[in-house]
Amino acid sequence: MLSQGAERHIILLKNISPATYDEAVYPLAQAIKFEVERNTGCYPAIGIGPAADHLTEIIHSYTSAARVLRCMAVTGEKNILTSADFVGSDTDSVMRTKRNSVIQKAKRFIDANYMRPDLSLNSVASSVNMSPNHFSTVFSQEAGKTFIEYLTCVRIDKAKKLLLKSDMKCSDITFEAGFSDPHYFSFIFKKNTGLSPREYR
Image (cartoon, rainbow, N blue to C red):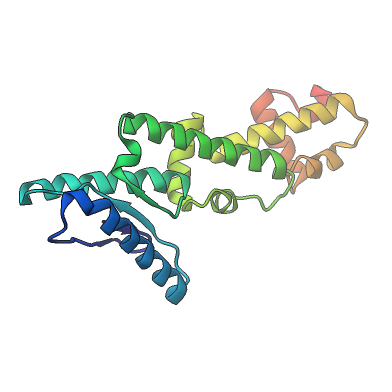
């Protein structure tokens, strides 16, 4: 059994019959999770590996539990899962699906908050319960562009629509699209479209 957070702890349980393994281990994991949350305010994720009949099988149990934790880390889940939850499925495929789900959630958050000048990698990562570094890596892999590149595209697309479908001043569009400086907005807009905002309009 593994728990993941700021620290990782490994718990080995001996002299448990394989027949009663699930009945013994899962309640213990629940008790540990409850006590940790009650006494520390931390919310651990716990992965449970399969029973090991021999010492040589312990590494397999450990690897299985670690794989479960990696899957939970992608989604930010703070739960108790066993390797049996992934039986019959391609773990890599499960992780890709979960990563995609997280990134889609992040994109929806960006689409709803792009107009905030203070929108950052940290705030978006926090919205999907991931560390900024991990989120940055996963986002680039799944979205095919960096967080900044994606956010800039969203803001430029919004600016394009406002330039063509409204009579707002360019300075007002700057702030409506999430930029905090008109000169910087013009520079980024031309860099991405080849035209200044006025020329595009």
